[in-house]
Length: 174
Image: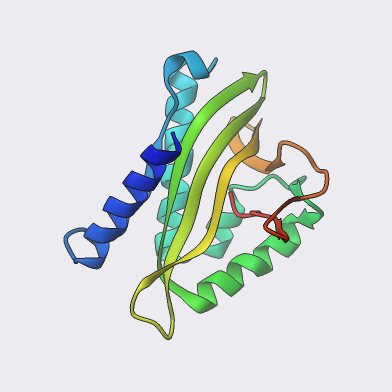
């Protein structure tokens, strides 16, 4: 699956840089054997991420925040803190888009864990080329259904972030 993500991200980014297509999200869902979600729920997840992408395009921080539960907590980062992180991203980057490759989805009642490899990309305000704003590998995204809508509530654990290469991995955006 890692090769698929890298290939999709590389081809997509090359097309964007060449001006062949506008930057848009790419969302891939796991094979049926890697999910217990039914077709309706998978479509709800697809729509959820499409709506997030539209809010990214319009740099609408209030709309972005509407996709997070008020109980959001990810490695100690709260929803209020996350809002300021998004404002910082919007201040420093243009033409944002995201890539999400889900490798496993587990739904249990009104909660779900979506294991995702992906990235958030944009053009730095003082730059000309796309750059990586954030990226993650096999991160468990925890979502919960509130008033009939899926909301991000954090990573699958509220424990300490992983260390990779001496750096802490937070990845709070998705």
